[in-house]
Length: 231
Image (cartoon, rainbow, N blue to C red):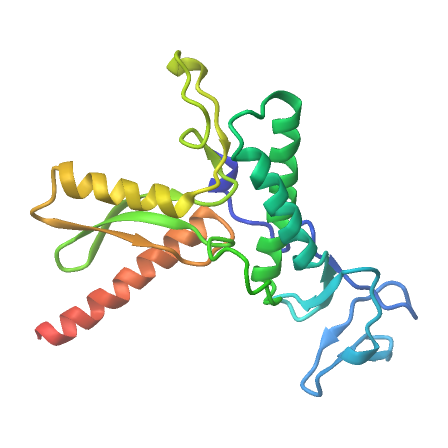
């Protein structure tokens, strides 16, 4: 099973749950009074959260206070790495370092989106999304798909090898473009053009399994509406 085909961890690795400074053992939990409470009795207000540098606090899906690196700095790192990756004259260790930096910065940006942290206004809309080229049968029946996302291993984003057996895969940097090109190819040459439609869906999701589930759910909701109107 490929790495991106596995369920995402409960928390991204760049997110750290903040432990109470008084007892040193338990995390803070958000309560209805808009403050964070530790089982030891210590209460922390949002205005009193003191973090280092550009770190940003967030609340995990379990309601615990946590922090992660700042998204603004991560976006600058992401763009700097992307500039190197888009330069066809870069190769070897310099390109490998750019791939590593690209994935590290992307991990912060995706975690920020997952945790509900505000992303920079000039950030790319592709961050945190799975772009799915989907085959939908008449009657809104989901039949299959091809999926792409930033950072996933991608042969299209790598130079074409003379030997197909030695084709490399680079971190994907154009998932939306890949999905739309796939759909356009299907519309021209697909063998089910008369019975199916080809669409691009782009759910926000931390992994392929969740992305596919959300894409299917969207099509299922459209099918329910279609059945209601057809009754």
